Image (cartoon, rainbow, N blue to C red; front, side, top):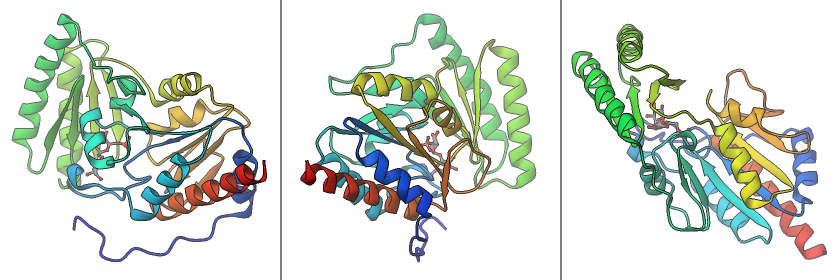
Length: 271
Ligand SMILES: O=P(O)(O)OC[C@H]1O[C@H](O[C@H]2O[C@H](CO)[C@@H](O)[C@H](O)[C@H]2O)[C@H](O)[C@@H](O)[C@@H]1O
């Protein structure tokens, strides 16, 4: 099934989180950095069909209207794919490919790979393409500096096999390959960046006094690790995390963002 038919209402937020949001809303310059899949958008079988739930989108639009408030999406998706599925105004800062691609306020920064990296991407394509072609329901998503090997619809055995073979063959061909495990996906990149570096870059770029970050996957842990004591991190869904707070999924993330926007709006009017 690609689209959940009924969405559960968001569970109430824990009072400790509401308190942290109230405090964060008073920050002079605030950066709200958000992962996309599993955080704003429920997971679906076809990545191109993923969309932020309406409540999350509305909350992001509300935050965008506030002064001294920047919103950024920090995603593992290729920038082009992130632009398509997020469908948000250009004032949203975008980080794609786990930090390799950026779209800030100035015209797009294109990723330009050097000759050696281009050759490595070609080799990767060949190696991973063979793995995807030979195992049922395994497919390859192309990104500027690498590939995501998707196994969401494969059996558990086939998924494990695909990951093992892809990893050993790709690493045998390319030294210093960056490999990331995500939800039903194994990602390979010829350039190394993390969402933590992306958050640090965005913090400097926006001159933010504090940062809010929400994410659901293993790669978001680098971003949580980059948060400072006065920042707020919220993990969406299950799994180990360094984030100080956890909510159940995109419905609750939307409620968190709406609550933050409402507090901040109130503070702006009081000033
Ligand atoms: O960093 P994110 O914004 O969370 O992106 C992580 C990966 O998201 C996409 O794959 C995941 O979501 C798909 C749609 O729900 C799902 O089908 C897949 O199983 C998930 O792994 C995207 O396709 C990847 O390129 C991103 O790296």
